[in-house]
Picture (cartoon, rainbow, N blue to C red):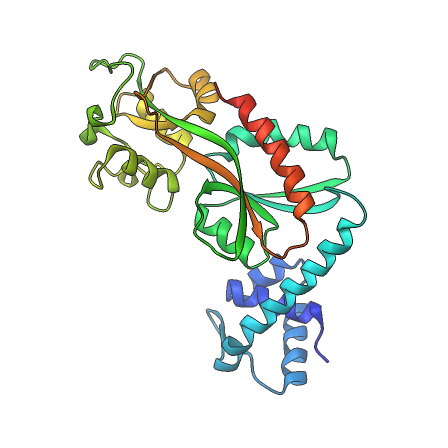
Length: 299
């Protein structure tokens, strides 16, 4: 009979396609993981993994069994979650994902609040792009995630947390003074700096300014909000800054922050989790606390 442990090892190997990285993911030695995979193959009487010098490939049978194995693991995790619910709200382990344009500003405020109010909670944080957060929640690698809504995945529930307005940031000594408030039509697209492809904030900025054109910041290697705003403070261009980042980044960078004219563009930050995770009361309690922490950073 195959075991839950073997299925978790197989899932890790299917995710990484590498024995060493899979072993690290599940915190075992590589020989131990390899032995369990071979035992699983013997029980099932099929070859699941094709081993080669560059790593590991799933065989046709391995690919066919992967969705069923992941569904079983999700059900097992849901069972553990429901059992945990009987012990109290926000106790035990919580794997929380959060997008990079929110994490640096929200986490320092949120974690002390969680520790104070829910001392039995053990939070594991992962900073991921929106697609990574959605995929990892969907496949049970995260319990929930803080992302910009909508997320576009029917199998996940969501709860709005707070509205995060967009503003325009320019260098403090900018020769071209921005009019306050600025209209979306007045944004100089030739000088607009954006995060690299994959960040939802990039798409939101383009949507606000009504263009898919613009100067790509990927050429400069700006993969984070902090790097982008450093470039702005040195007069390399202008960018959209979410309100949640303003207090923090204004102290680090010499910037002028200008609001948009009404109606002001914004993004909705929300919490997502699996529909049948069995942790609805946990998610509701977490959502209330994140909303409180987020609103304290705004305005």
